[in-house]
Image (cartoon, rainbow, N blue to C red):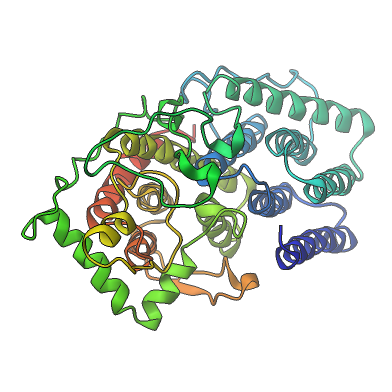
Length: 439
């Protein structure tokens, strides 16, 4: 972690702690809504600073975190319906004792604190201190004025819900990440058009998470449930569709406007420098929910559905990335069009087709549109603390399309990967939207 990014992390943790202190000073104790808000803020910062948190891994963590939040909230709600029996392999969570008192805020904090500690167990010392401090301060604050027996019972139940979901997570195929997700052994495909490494880093001579597409998904049946059509056939011929796409990437890079550069940087969402692409959409949802002063039930169902869709999006996308195993623009352009080509963004170390940004953004837009409606305008200030101005969007799909085209501006994806990814995301998001979150 660079000194600058370390300082940002510390500032974020201090800000969250001060925010909690101000809540305790003004109110008797934090509400369940504030419990979810604060834990979301912490999760976004932890995702930024945990080395194994590539975008697919981050998406998995957000999905399990918000399934925990949803189940802990649904257990005390007459409105929310459990996702058990709807998500693949999730069995009913432990129930509350009949006729006994529970406090929803205490239970939710216990569930989220338990889940965060497990899901970010490999974060660094600063992250561990932030986890401990948040759990201690928020745990004490939310239990203020709650009868001790009720607080203890609520805490135990919340922890049991989290452990139940975390036990379910262990068998999904993504539990253990070795070597930051890069296989120690992997046979690269040979032949024209096949992916080859684009980085000089030794670790990245093999592609990231090649088996991720085989993981158990959440809402869709399997990783092949929403396939993308084949990309244009690889060809070096001057009149071929594939070469035309490569020429487009090169010409766009040569003529980038200031606005296109800003778009590429705003949606870059690089691991260790941001909350990652799925974290960016989690931050968007948090901002929208804050703007509507949403209650905890609304927050839990939106966040769980969104996170499930994005986790499935990375599974579906990775399934097809390694099915097509397509070369990246930088490799083709340097070999056949311009040896000195330098894309604006760093090319990620895995196959090109389809675009992960596009797939997960299409899934996110599908979910958020289902909850908030077509033409829902919002402002995204996710990166203001990093010096990137907020951007305004007339709809969630407008944001998704901008996120997708940003990868063309960045020089790291062909147009077919962008368009195919958006449609794949729309299909995957529909599986999440079909979940019944209300009774």
